[in-house]
Length: 584
Image (tube, rainbow, N blue to C red):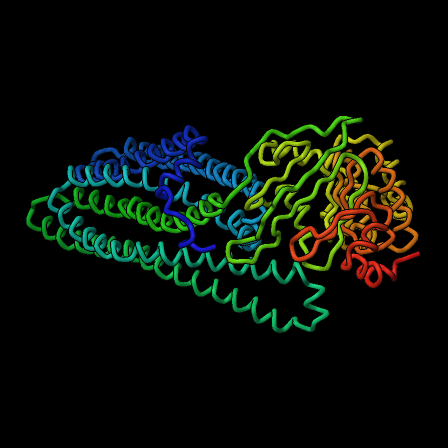
């Protein structure tokens, strides 16, 4: 996913205001406190001038000292409270952005996820959103409060001595010209740095997702070089961004030092000629010192905004990926709900415009109840049938109906609530065994859980686990065997009480005893539910009420095992070879 792949969206400042808007009053309170803090600081040079005048004329200085002490204490207290309010608000902005982005990513269309790198998406929700913290306080508030304080300071300096103000502004203008050249480079470097972080995350996710394969292939060193190269690229781009940011900050600092020296020289000459007194020169020099803070705030705000703009752009790219429509969570089908009828009519489908078609006019019908098995050589399009039923993808042409109603007309959440799906690789999520079983129906009662656990022959596993159902199963279920993960997936699907059960080679990793038991369970479920099975074992296929034979993205025959052995040469060959080893 590159920047060029997405349309130009709203400017970054508008995106930032969208995230800040829910917290605008807290942000305003923090900004007001910062301004009041700045105002107390602006009063200090005037009090200092009064103190010097009192000393020059042998007057009492107690009042001036008390006032300076009060201003210093007030400045520190208000500054601390204001800083806390701003930081808390910034964290709230980050939280809101992470909630919004994580919710959106969960609703991404599967096709969009297929074209993206999961590691890069994770970087957008972690490191990119983190940058909003600084851009909220340093950029948005810093620019506002720093700008106002800068204007106020300049006004006060003009009241003290307009000539010295002109000298100071000449130096500041020169520095501003240099910053105008540097700032665009910060934006480009920051964007490239964030892209490099995303690429590094994608590389790491790629390796960790297949770590056993990497180790078994002896490819640790090669993958290590790839990871190191990604990390080094991230380092190079981050250093480049830091170089331009440092240049901007040092330019501002250098300008203020030059301004101080110039004011000291010109001011000293004016004192010598009697144009101003020493107290005025000291007050103006204090304002020059004080001017450093708002100028650095403004420069820092502009610099941070460039970094934040890059992060906002990456977040917005993720939010422009195609997503499924948001719909209210649908309740699970009530007990006794009628099983579903399914039909494909002339369905054509391919996973991307630059890929060949997987389905070429697939047509078949499945009546309510009973088991329908899909068989055929690898690549025939059997698993894709299930993906289309779940609406992970939509067909390019043709229609798919459930209960006579086009899938496109179904509310997505309600459609999926009627389906139990066991994927080919039977994924298990990190967490407890109970969490995984209740993933699709968290309201299931204990009696139902116990019954389904026994039905899927997981009761022996639960008895062996140290904490029973509450035992953690590890990342991607690494503490379970392949057969145990398949049984967990089947149990999870059954606990949804589906009207339509999809089993994609759901018993491929089971031993003969467990397979026979689960085969009986599926046959029992098929009496009250519509069951679709992708199977490669003859024992599973022969018990089906109907068999759909697929080849090269087409349905070539439909019938029973006995009918197809006699009528379809491909099925007869599969039954005689691929299925034969599993025959009783």
